[in-house]
Length: 206
Image 1 (cartoon, rainbow, N blue to C red):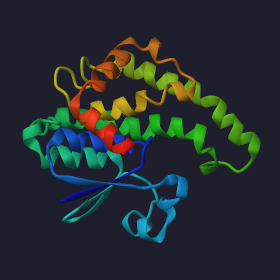
Image 2: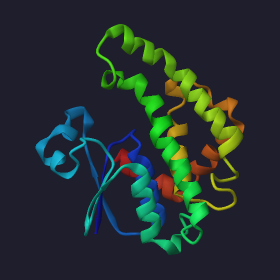
Image 3: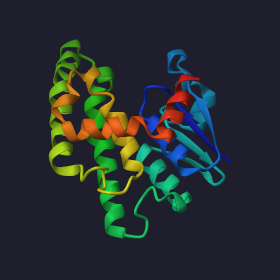
Image 4: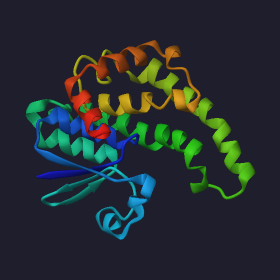
């Protein structure tokens, strides 16, 4: 059985949502960041990066959200969580998810973990001050050029939708009003009512 290591409030929620949508049997194990469990020897043996998510499979451990999302979609093709049948469309899905991972998430992290990139207090504060601008720029691009609508890929729901839902939920905390992105806001509202999203959120609260 699959085991997903997650932490509430993190990007691991996207993987929780994908697993809930897939219908696959899985176990969810919380990693308590407040007690630094992500740096414990036990967890580092699972994911040496000391981050979430990490998905334990029968063949080994997968880390990084885009990889986990693609794996879940491929493992449950009947759930139609990715356009596995079309190499171009699948690459387009991967392009979107990797943009969230490599750019949007990094923008967000500069506000909370700027010490990853600098030691000087002035530099850290400068990075924090830039977050609202970089997040707004990224979401403007998603709103105007990348969100096909009504779902990320167009008419069909995919694992990219759960990932966008998570990132959209970070906007207010980053000093960005989601209302300036009407299509993304509509997407977020639709996501909240999906049963799989509700189950994933319940796991985070448990």
